[in-house]
Image 1 (cartoon, rainbow, N blue to C red):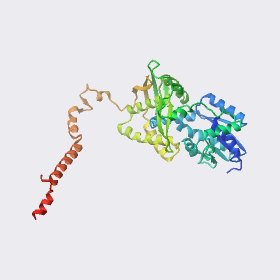
Image 2 (tube, rainbow, N blue to C red):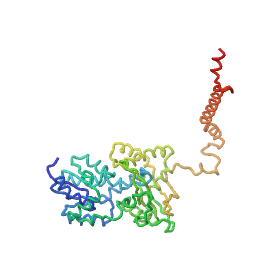
Image 3 (cartoon, rainbow, N blue to C red):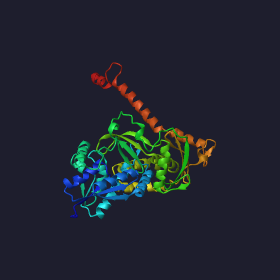
Image 4 (cartoon, helix red, strand yellow):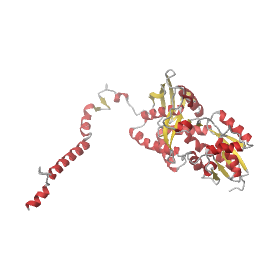
Length: 421
């Protein structure tokens, strides 16, 4: 443990992290706080806010570009068809990437501690700390440890004349990265509240644009090109966010179960993620066997759950990745996707690894590799035999039971025997 009394703070320039700066000095006795902002595809104005707030606080501020690393994480998630309770994972994928980048800065600057502004009710505290607690640095969570509320923070910010707009960051709590945009809070906390159209920024109202089709090329499970044009991961995701979003693709309004047991209302936008996941699953349907697909659903679910928990570094995930990577060796080909009415629907797929024979599946061919249609008669006779047998046995057993219970007088056969004797 270093003697340096410096703490690295995950810094966004918003209310929570801004009040953490003086609190870390006053309540935790740290001599210096450095702010670290990690770029995983947020809007430019968020970095402007962080820079301006850091300058007003006289805070040493680091900005780390992690877009490429995060984009690769997102495309790994495509290979595992990673969704949680029906929506593509986004924030959960970003947090470990952000945490790793902040930890690297903290270690480079010889910090004694590392801190975040998460509350004690959400998932992010767990995702950050899962990474940080593997280091020798002290982990601090002022908002959680001091039991702070938004109302208290706003009053504190006003008293300290902190550079926040009265503690008001808008009607909604919004988290944006390259892969997804989440909107929550305020009226959206009421499950019965119908959100206004203006909560959406990435997606236009569905059905307002003419139908459009694109072709996505995959190489061993990774999307590498759109309509034949190869693109690096970040560019490909940004391109699809714009295109699919213009068709209203990728909106989710749901009740989500957090790790701490709370059920929360969440709204998400994820145009590129929805498009790529739909296309990838369609290609897997063409190239993987029934057994591979069936087992992979279990693997994908486990992978997604660990990703949601922020635990992609767990040994279990290494084992899951081994299976996923093996299956993805054959997930090479193209998928045609149609954008229509807010949907990204696969309408065509091609691959050299297709486990498919058009002649075998056709109703216009009499046989399959020398197997005649009549050969299926025996299979059809055996199909369901055990179920039919079980049902028949159960029926006979019930009939015998009824016969033993009564002879018509309401007395059992065993009672009659005792009386006769």
